[in-house]
Image 1 (cartoon, protein in one colour):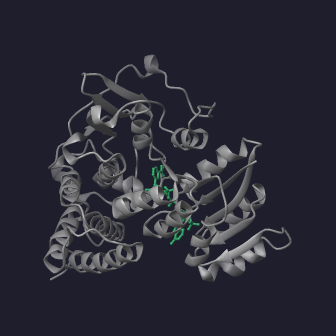
Image 2: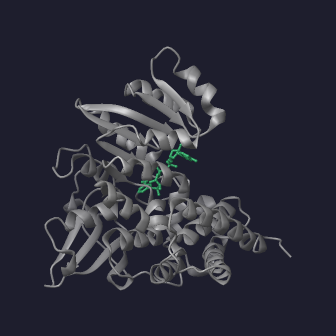
Image 3: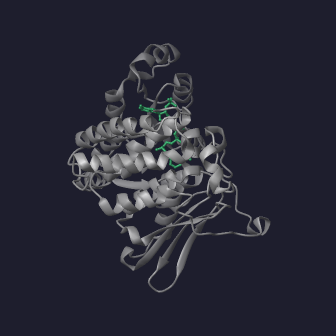
Length: 392
Ligand SMILES: NC(=O)c1ccc[n+]([C@@H]2O[C@H](COP(=O)([O-])OP(=O)(O)OC[C@H]3O[C@@H](n4cnc5c(N)ncnc54)[C@H](OP(=O)(O)O)[C@@H]3O)[C@@H](O)[C@H]2O)c1
């Protein structure tokens, strides 16, 4: 039996992972973790006969204990308990907690030298260098789960990264891609929270409309594949059928195509290095008829220009960028700032942080990353508040 843990089991990626695990009979589920959705966590723990279920929140412990009473499944709560679950021996661990909370469990998982399927974007963006060093130190394997990075990873099988000229990540353009530029300032969270192709949570869907999601992915690709900023491109591709393109020195371009379903990249990571049958729709190109591509307009998507700044700056810039865009998004969802205020909040936070401390100095430990995250959130809060609607 293969021992498997899922961090963020109650979320979108976590549930897709459990869907795949439920179809197999060679899996022993070790740890499942969640946040506030206790009933979903308990249901999953029972259905998958997990050894332990952990909620990140102490005040959810009593409910989780009650839901799992008499099942023999261990129960725990708190951030430390989630990280400790990452130390439980497992052959494959899905890292799908959202946000900076995913960092510590991810590091714990890597320390046991196992295979970690990495969905948590924030890990690579905020602490890419540390994370890869931790994996190397313990002989752990990180497999990318973001669909674009999985696509690049698959296109690179058997290839020499030195022969790569460019990597292109595709972007649907999000829910506002057809809006006139002048109207974007009045877009609401509901407008931005509708995705044309992918079924995801509200935050990541809004991040798709603002292209902050793609900006995070560009930085992830830079960190994970070790490619310089100038080799990473973004192309608007409304059909979301091509996930990424890798161009090589001999002029060849390898593209990865597939239906937009996260169970493909998750399943690829689960079966890697083999391929196995997956319950995803098959791409019917004749039915699709056409594939469109366009260069992104940086006036419409300033987040992409900020990603470029972050890659060229290096050091702490990724941690500050991530924290600032989270705070800007919180303010937009709370309708305190407008859609087009988010990028200026991030830009100003990066510049204010740089005037206080060195942005180019890389954090030397996970604790330092988390301290920078806290400081940048506070700074971004001040910047966002100064732009709040009705602010003097
Ligand atoms: N959705 C996608 O298609 C997709 C694609 C590629 C990459 N990703 C990345 O994968 C990660 C997960 O995305 P998602 O869409 O699955 O997110 P999601 O649906 O919001 O799920 C997030 C998971 O994290 C848990 N969680 C929330 N706060 C936590 C905390 N403080 N400590 C521990 N656990 C906490 C949630 O628990 P509760 O729900 O129980 O509170 C849930 O299990 C993100 O980094 C995202 O950017 C997502």
